[in-house]
Length: 158
Image (cartoon, rainbow, N blue to C red; front, side):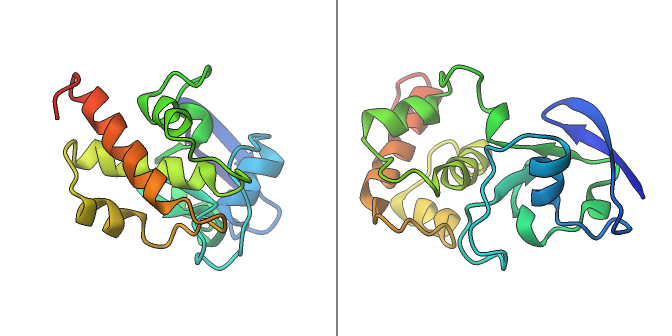
């Protein structure tokens, strides 16, 4: 089965031998060759596989490829080619990454939050990031980085 959609703003058609049931995560990684999105649990519990579907953060490990027909999918590769996105800069400034495995999912959840809410409170951040597990426990730094990026995206205004 062929599924046609936009991947990081580029039209793409992916062939799926499983009749469209292949998880979007594996289609992105194995068929499209974009390996920034990570496999964590395979059950939508950890958030490592988070991508955007029509601007909303979703778990790609449990999303069948057929469900993205005609829609827009964005992966971590779409934030910026050179780590210049305000979230990526804030992540580095706040020393968020430790092992780094969860980071693409964390960043994609944070990007969806900031697109919907440019001035999130701590409670907004906690709610949006629930389900993104960081085994290294950098949750406080993640929150600081999101606030830093939000301020930059607002033009430096707090």
